[in-house]
Image (cartoon, rainbow, N blue to C red):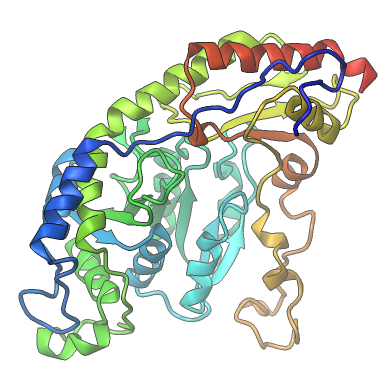
Length: 424
């Protein structure tokens, strides 16, 4: 039986479980029932013909996305990881090509690059938005650099306007990973809609979901056609398509089913409303705890909007003399749920740190054109590393349906912990 006593004695601030976030309603249930009654759960065929592009609901979803996001082409896939593999493959990436990205993201971003035998080149992040630091990108560009994978982390979009300027200057392509930032804006444009290829995640803990799934968007017809091939067994189709320009077309089964597509249509209808609710919740929390000394709450840059997949907090070690772990422990003891320490540092994953034969040319990242090893050593991304090791606290706001009273309880828990920092 769980204790109701907090770390400091007396009752816990929060003595109940937060309501789980659930976006599935009668609309989705009705849509799934209709699919089930039809008996057509997927309508793909892995060969050239009318069913190469999938079933009725997949096509309907893609048309819906084109209108909602104001893009020329949309592609539904079975996960956003699949979407990243499609996007990078569409750029005609060759083994040994380099793609620049942030280390502060999910492992699929680097894995999708390695999938095509290309080389991830990590650039450190901004300490306020947690996105790639645009000012550091150019120093990592070589003659082998072919693209920038710009990742919108925690809900705040990357500085895509300046990333695109750099890309244009160096003739690079730009992919945006907006898995955590659907319906975020840069000026009046939805993130992921103004680059070569962008996309969104639909797995269960995102703003909207289909269980698993992803959406790719582009305004480039050639990229679209290449991604449809990668999605659906390309090598079985290319010859009959009679296109001579389609090289390196290794295909997979990345196809979304009819049930997921039917759910996605209804989910996307709710997206704007759900993001606005998250924004209201998080702005309310910022208002209630933003005054706490040494606690830095999420910021949003001018001309950008934030969709708050995670509520990312930092502690200032110049002010806070208590370890992050003790603070997190105290918050959990007060009943705050969904709290965690740190985030990803992809360059420190075992695949980059424990390479048998490192430096002997056994891995595509072993040698650059000037004969120097590409470094994945600790220290190459100091901002990301310090956030992970010492200062970042994440509140996984997308896991819960929080009302005004919940936010007040959470704020009270933070205030209580801050009032007792000296005894931690």
